[in-house]
Length: 556
Image (spheres, rainbow, N blue to C red):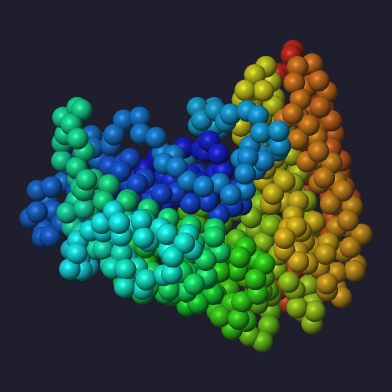
């Protein structure tokens, strides 16, 4: 059994998952925001951790003979951040601090993170056994000239050569499934200090790097002629790896998820629906679906999009205790598909019901609830469907109040050193800014997104409530941002204002508790919880002589 620790992020929490071994058997979960960020490869991250040698064996005797102690095999002081690209820029890199100043202190974040463990038997099974090698083509390596030619093709400096592209992909696939290369990852031979590291140690990593580099370059250059040749070859050659050993399986899943387009929907749906597939492959399949929609900006074929929505909703229902990072990506994909139903023609809005269920469940991680709110704002309700917009907006408001209160609590706990220990407060504010707020106001690049912009005849009765709620949430966000930007003597006063804004939001929600808690006629009910404590409604202004406030209570 492998236990792999996850540390909270230095940067976008999403990056950590891809950088810290998404195919772990057990893991402490990271955090993330919205964004499509890519690490070098799952293998590169795997090098940081110990994996039982028995995870790769040609026969049982060899497997038993090669077992090692994972704790002894893990390198010390390994850096989990193995590079990557953050296309959203520095403005989102540090949540709620557009001037881009400040550095997240990982040690402080550790103190605030709870441990979440998850064991995936499917990943364990894929991490053991004798999986087939994909044979090398006649040439086992690309020459320097050939690599240069491939890069020129991707950069649109020369025409795509299908023969060379196929040869390149075949070699990288062979490298990823090579038993010798996998063994170097999971059971590396001892080396003396200062000794040169074998090229096999990073062979799989480099193979993945080249494939994703070529795609990334062509995508950046908008080189459609190259992509039209390259992507189908990738899909053809990498798909068999999804049933191979865990390491190449995750390499293939990450690359295919990154490349994700509309032609690959059936492949992604199959992985999500496959009860024997590793949960971390399912995560990348969900990411691939989101990429196929261009983050909700592209409308896909309605039949395939409906099938994808049905598979994603079925996953949430079948595996409610799946790791929260996977749930977040599944929920995000549902939002990006923008369909309320799981059947065609549209019937009951079961997709929205699944999102509201995850939003309203206070036992869920804040990330799951926040992304549920975000996805609710993207789904386009069918005009003929009767729907209770008030109850879903109400639960969005309660989540916003809880996040605002937790930001204040973080200040109370680190009052004297808040300027240096505001990492978690920044993260919580980021959830308010980038997930909760767009659920009402919408995403700038996604047409008709946000409940306030929704075109549905049944939304009129809830419009006034949602407009006022949006104003209340914006007030909380403004004070949270001001708290993060402030310093010195002005901090206590802003903290007091934040407490008042949260209290006003809770009072507004209490005054407007919806009587009808049924999501749609005959559908599930989501009771409207009251504010959890009186202290929450009337927070005391923090001062140097006051006692630390108690942790925020969860609404019941």
